[in-house]
Length: 66
Image 1 (cartoon, one colour):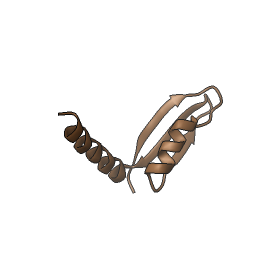
Image 2 (cartoon, rainbow, N blue to C red):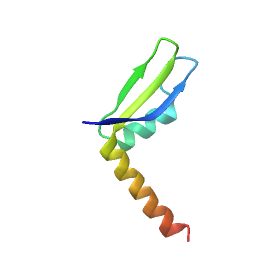
Image 3 (cartoon, one colour):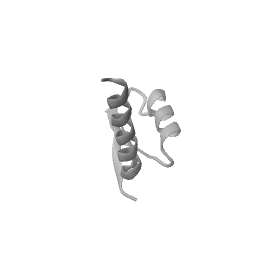
Image 4 (spheres, helix red, strand yellow):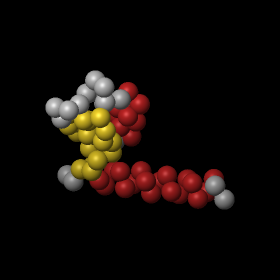
């Protein structure tokens, strides 16, 4: 399964921020977390799922933001 970065950034604790973790858990079926020694966190999600979510968001924006 091809994965893509959903979030990438340095944190004070080296943990995934709660809002990012909640989003990922509620939207995607699987995800991977990589924590680097410099407290940089990378959250990866399936590319196919991400693209479907992005497509849905675009449709909603077009419908409601006329």
